[in-house]
Image (cartoon, rainbow over all chains, first blue to last red):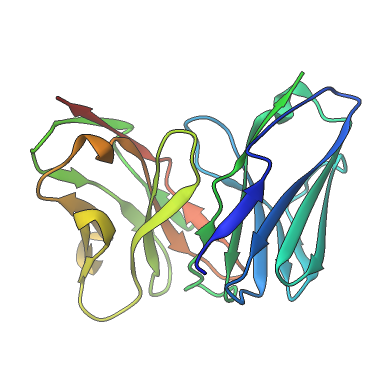
Length: 114
Length: 112
């Protein structure tokens, strides 16, 4: 299985809602990532989990809360988002974190905040 | 500073014609280089990667890329494009500590 899966594919939420994005991989990868991507831009790294521990938080607002329940699963909890948070949210995974870290991406969740 | 430059924001190519997308990098050590493709509304798919060895690397979907250290380039090529190749293409270099340094992307438009 060489796939990263993400649910849901699309999400529309109001600014007062709480929702979660889910990501799963079964490739035995020990690093998992959340990215945010705006239209016509490359992905921006948000969080990295390595061996189920938060390794990198790129100064992301606290309304985004990541969680890694086990080595195969990654969640992103959303609360009190702003319209400017509307974007494609991508999950990725890799074996390690060095310069040769080939990252495998999921199809993304298209988030719209009203 | 480490960086990746894709000089062309968009490129238009006729179906069946050859393609070259440019990528230049600035990196202090031996670079590990990647090309990813993103179809509209989709995630990113790895086309090919260069770590070491043969400087001409073959990827999926008939793509290849050539690493030229003297020119700090890693250009992507395809001899004959298909309409399904229309997408956004990103070049990236692997940095330490889980980071990928991304180029701005090149949008490929295919003319029928």
